[in-house]
Each structure stands twice: as C-alpha cells, then as structure tokens.
Length: 142
Image (tube, rainbow, N blue to C red; front, top):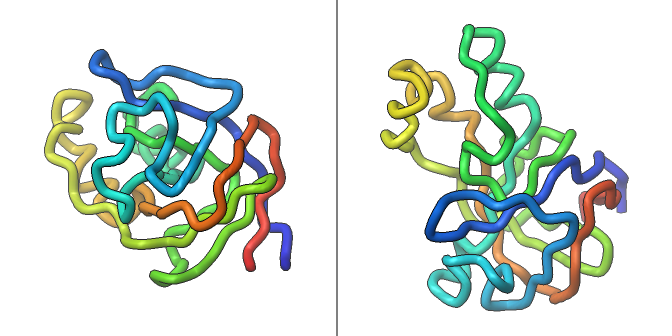
C-alpha cells in the first residue's frame, strides 16, 4: 500500500447540480444521497484530479470545483491508472472501472473545455468495500 495523495473536496450529484459535502457514505450501490445511487455500479464514483482544474485555468478557463461532475476531487492524478487498479481511502476500497469520456455539456462552461479535458476529466470507480470518506483523507494505491 503506497500513499499517493489526499482528498481535497467531496461532492454528490443532485437534480440541481453538484452539492459539496464534508463526508460521503459509500456502499456497493454507490454514493448514498447521490442522484446516481443504485444506477450503474461501474460508474458510481467519479474521481477527478486538481490537475484538471489547473489545466483549464492554464488555458484561461476558470472552473469552480465540482463543475466537472466529480464526487471526489483529489490532489493525485489517477488518469494513468488502468482499469482494475484499486484505491483505499479511509475504510473504503474503490476499483477503477473506466476512464471518463468526452462530455459535450462542458461547452456550457467554455466551448474549448470538452476537447481540452477529453483525456483529463476523471476516472470512474466502483465501490468494493463500503464506508465513508471525508475531506483530507489519505489515498493509498493498493
């Protein structure tokens, strides 16, 4: 187990967009209280890196945290991880299930954003071990 980073911010999806949270409860159906809960376990947790926001900012696009649809915003870049890689955060174990695809809805923020973040938006994970995650929790690569 190797420490790779920390959780910077947490969000859950609502009908009105992303809502910040100081703690998220997760089980095998996803993030409790999230509008996507119990819909697709392979895509139940979206993890984004602070690097995505830095990339956007470096191209003149100021995007508020949570705007990329992430549930976990972390200070580690997981985009190189292969499907099946596992992360342990607090008592939760997540498995990377797929990389995010291009999201055309980002054109509402800026016309350049979808193409800019096409390989740098985030990764989806499924929950292997239930528990809760808080801001500041350590992230370990298993």
